[in-house]
Length: 306
Image (cartoon, one colour):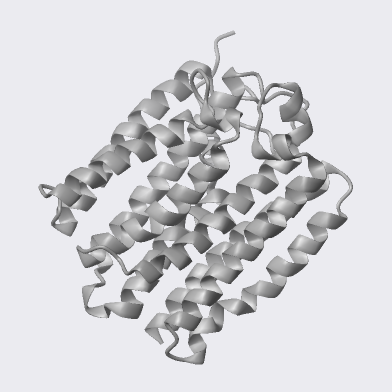
């Protein structure tokens, strides 16, 4: 019997829409920084196009992750997380490979349109952004796909810190400002990077036992169960501290600390991580950190427009 074509629902499932809020946190934070210091430079069309391009890149990363883990034999019946689309047989290797190529091209086109609308496409900074964009596409695909993927060697945390933190926040700010963001902006950019890395670490902590047997040497596998929890607490702490220091140094009103209403959720989360005894119990914690990071960025944005 021939394999049926994947449905739209299958592709939506493979896209893992629940991961989008975390990806958008970097763009929202970047926009908040622009409004905070140079509100006259904020551009709604650029903001929307940046969000769209980021969504495409995140879906590309999710599809490539699905493809890579399946082809490396990591996704099977022993995996603790949700059933993946290729793992369930709803999408074939050929279908996913073709979709990844098409989406990668779409990401590139979307990025070029964004640079054109921001007015820097033909400039030196535009060239650098194209290079960063190509690097982002490469990183999205090579996290788990291909030979010797860097995610299988424990470099995923650093990649997330760079792309979801430094490049994501500072790069999106630059598209509005057309100039290098303030040095101070490295702090909220780092905050987003630390918290995003915490989400990945939590995912890897959940899968560590299975990954270890299958040769996927993530940071959680390298550190071991207890040390991974300490590392996780550090990521959450650094994420909060970086944002607090930024707010202190750029203080204008008490609203600058509005995002701190989220901090109890993150602190209780860290306590819960140390309490869990089985890897499966870490799964519900993923949503807490991802959504907390998203709402922190939203509250930071709201504080700047009030």
